[in-house]
Figure 1 (spheres, rainbow, N blue to C red):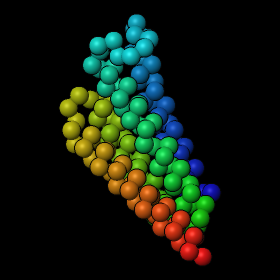
Figure 2 (figure 1 turned 90 degrees about the horizontal axis):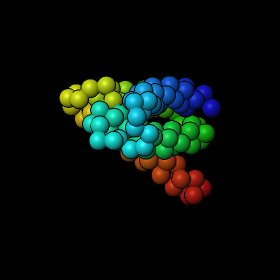
Figure 3 (figure 1 turned 180 degrees about the vertical axis):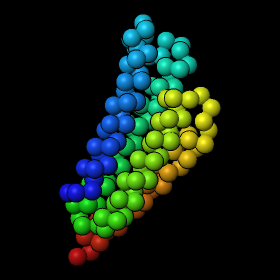
Amino acid sequence: MIVTPIYAGILAILFFVLSMRVVALRGHGVSLGDGGNPILLRRIRAHGNFSEYVPFILLMMAMLEFNKFSIYLLHAMGITLVIARLLHGYALSFTEKFKFGRFWGTALTYLVMIAAGVLCLYQGLRASAL
């Protein structure tokens, strides 16, 4: 595999940044939950949301790459996913009112997830017909 590890690496660094944003506020007395702190809640959700979507999408990308799907398509999905998660992560973890980032980050993440899902379904159906 060539393409998926590139995006997994980039996204791992972004995940680390989001993780450190949570840890930085946890050092101020809240060891579990959000302690009623709305800033900490936003950071926790940015981190959690990332962990809920990105691994599954990367898994689908890896399956597609393993089965020789177009590297151009995989790069398009990877670039779109990175942009989506940067927008969403910035909107949730670094700001309070960047609705553009939250909306488009979510929309682009869903777009990549649906595209990867449809392609994986196509791959599975095509392989079972052979």
